[in-house]
Length: 312
Image (cartoon, rainbow, N blue to C red; front, side, top):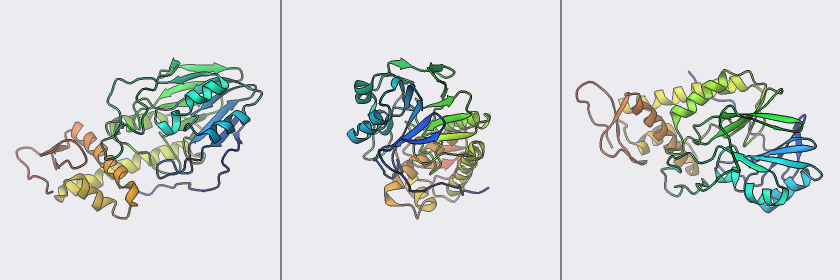
């Protein structure tokens, strides 16, 4: 089992330009690059005379101007939101005020949002976000010249949706599957159990191309999904190996497994470890001792009878 994934990190992007990436599909990249957004958030325009906009991105005036230019002379019927993280949804209301269209998203989840991490909290999530049209798994949204099936794919976020372009074997995957990096699973916002179950659903499909929320198109969807799943299984095994060796706190596991990672990504790595540990606990493979919340939690391998506590 290998941890290696083939990422596409080509850094060729022309901000503010609507590029045709498939018949009837254009992409405009927001100028918000970063360690979690790569080159920026992808906004997709689907259709011709009447169009749907998928993920308007941040509330960045230059980006909204670019979307407005690209859709001049066309009617915007819908603004689709894959999930309520601010780099995807903050532009929805200002774009609607400019161009119209009904905002469609999953809507409130009734669950705890945000991430257990210093400096994050719920700051990257718009907890007050509410769409005009709440969408559910299995819904089909039609416009003049396009139709999109709604796929509820929680894991990265509890409200995460993907949108399948009917008749094109094409899925807009948001942050659920990306070609440039693995997806961050940050509890309580993220759930490893939900993420893997959602990947299983995608693996059963026969799609031809994925258009992710960040980075370039994915030409081998099923292969990439299976690689994601294999990577997560491998990561789980490495975490269990750490616990077997007495490395039982999240900071020490991160130091062991991600020693060469950039400092600004260490928090994401710690959250990923926490997500894996939560999934292991739920299956009875790992038990906790001492602190049970946050990124300094201690964990021990579950065993019959009493086990030795993990070292700090």
